Length: 182
Image (cartoon, rainbow, N blue to C red):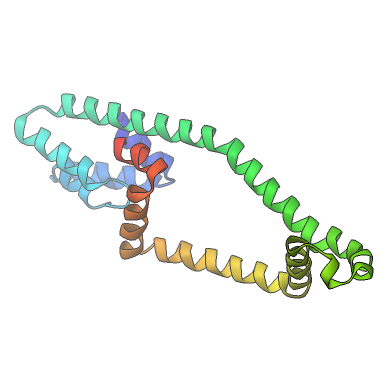
């Protein structure tokens, strides 16, 4: 019971606890009271409680739910800890590359212009082209990326978007094993 009560309190839904108590005092079964809050208590929790009620094994079911919840929390913490360093390195690397292309490379443009277009290697010409594009359209790219991230976040909040996001996670090789085991 502490696991389920803790989950409700952790999600900032303290009034749910009072409503659960009132529903149970009013004669509803524990599982029916939990089922009224599907955003807090997943169907697997509700159905396991319902099975425990039917079999008279509520304490064992609650122990299993607690173990399951603790395992998931531990896995989430380990994943978060493991992903912090790579994300920081990736963000810093992309930031440095964008800074170099947008601000440092244009300083050398006059030197490169003296060499003429044929004197420059193809990769240098490509970087100069990217630099020019970034200085002209970089703000539009940043705004478009922010808008795309916002729209993706909103789409994932819908049931269809959530299913698609979960399907993508289950098909991504590195993430698949972690998600499937939880």
